[in-house]
Structures are given as C-alpha cells and as structure tokens.
View (cartoon, rainbow, N blue to C red):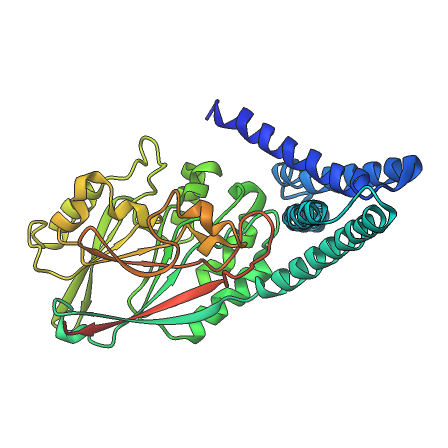
Length: 395
C-alpha cells in the first residue's frame, strides 16, 4: 500500500497536467486566455478532488449539508475523468493532422488550431452530457433474472428465488431515501430468500446508521442474510456487526444456516470478505463446519450448497476449498461491472469476471453489478442491478 500511494499520486498528477496543457495551451488562447483557462481548470479539478476529504468529514450532524457538496464534487470528478479521455482522442487526431498536413503554412496551422479548440470544447460538452446521463441511469437498479439449474437442487426448491443485492454503498452520496426505494423494489419482486452480499456502507454507524434503517424492512419468507464486503472493513466492521445485531439483521460471519422448505433443505454458507482481519478474516472451513450445529454433516458434499462471498475471486482462493467442500453456487458482487466504462478493463485485472454467470474452479459464480455506486454516483455501460436467481432442479 505504501508503494501504491506515491504511484497513484504521480499518475493523477500527470493526468491533471495533461488536461491543463490541452485546455490552456494546446488551444493557443494567448497569455490572458491561458491564464484564465489554467485557473479555471485548476478550480474545477480541485473541487472534484475535494470529494474525498468532504466524504471523510461527514458526520450525523453535518451530513445534510455536506452530502450535496460531495455529490457535486464526485460528479465533477467524473466529468474530469471523461474530459481526460476526450482530450487524449483530440490530441491523437491533432497529431495525425499534423503528420499529413503542412502545419507551417497558414492553410495548415490555423485550421488545426481551430479544430483543437472546437474539439476540446466538444470533449468537455460530451463529458458533461455523458455524466448527466450516467447519473440518471445510476439512480434505479434493474431486476436481472437468472435461472440456475443443478441436479442437486432439492425437489422442494425447484422454482425457489433468491434476491442477490450487493454494493449499496450508502454513505456520502447515497441516503436512506434511496435505500428505501431499493428495498421496496426488492420486496416487490417477492423473493423467497434475500442475500445482501457486502459493501453496504461507506461510513460509520454514528454517521449513517439512520440511513441504513430501511434495510430492516427487507422481507423474504425464508430470511434475509448479510455478508461483509471490503468497505465494511474500511468503515468499522465491529461497529457495523453490533449495529446489525441490534436491529435483528443476521450476518453470516463465517457461518452457515440450513434453509428448510417442507421436507427439503439446502445449506447457505456465508464468509467475510477476503480483506477481513482478525477476528473477521474469511474462513470457509469454519463456516461449513458450523453446519454440524444444524445436524448436517459438513462432509456431505452431495447436499446443495450456496455460498455468499463478496468477491467472485473468492471462488478461486483457499486452494480450491469451495469446490472441495461441495459449494455449488456462489453469489458475489464487488466489481460494479466496471461502473464507468472503460474501468472494466482495470477490474478484470483484479477479478476473474465482471458480471453474470461463470464457472470458476468447479463452482458456478453469479456476480452482480451491484445496486449502488462507489465514488461518483454514475453508471456508464454498467447498469446497476438486483439479481433474482431462480433455482431449477435439473442438469
């Protein structure tokens, strides 16, 4: 981590320098224009970057005042990101123009500069429009229906539905009103079981506890279960565990429960996120072993078993333990589907999948793009979703 921070600062600094160069100097605005463009760029970029310290400063007392500022700052930061991408395209086009045209003549140089000015303004306008569209798109997750077939699904559970909800990220931007809408949307789908698989929060219970209360209104006849994500560990996991317990919300803290329907049953296993530290480090073996408390043999791998684990990568960890312990289906999130194109190219460097249904090391993994958003409340080519998995008995 100590090495990553300086590298990140260097990369961000280089990006900001590039934006200022392209906006203020490549457009050849003259000294006064360059000064104004430089100052304007710096102010916009500084406001965008203020989203992080403003978010960290949120408390229960100032949240109503700071939340709109944080939202505006994050949206500005997202615009800056897409302006950077647009200006890269403008620069490449200008370089091609310069190679094929006589830029030393009035017929070459002046038209190219006019092109750079118009294209730079267009890049900014397109970035603003794109973020506006992405902000509106990120407000309401869609229901994604997935059928999962397995011959080990008990007959009594054929047609059983599981709602997979991940990555709510309630905190500096998302509030309790938004969460209540999501909860109502989930309840309206009438799932038999609800799994909230991590990254519920970005903040402490003291700051955003009231915003999380709509989660207590989730209802499914066979229960609502939570697992931790990496952001719970950034936000005080012990305090959140206590909060969930106080509000009678069951957290699968490296443990399992048996879901019974008539005379049939299956095992639901939940582990902490892979970033968890003592005493909340992930322990899949411990979780499966806890089935003995339900009079189920942990070694009975012929039973249908569902694992709730925040990151799809966890299906590949622990020396393939998930498959060896008889896990058939893993429910995960974390990736956000990339959230904002082209971030998916970076996500796939850290996770084996982006979203959807995949077979990983002998385990079928369903990965949700998540219902919320981290950082900028924006979705571009990665729509938010609530996944509704229907179990089917069959090959």
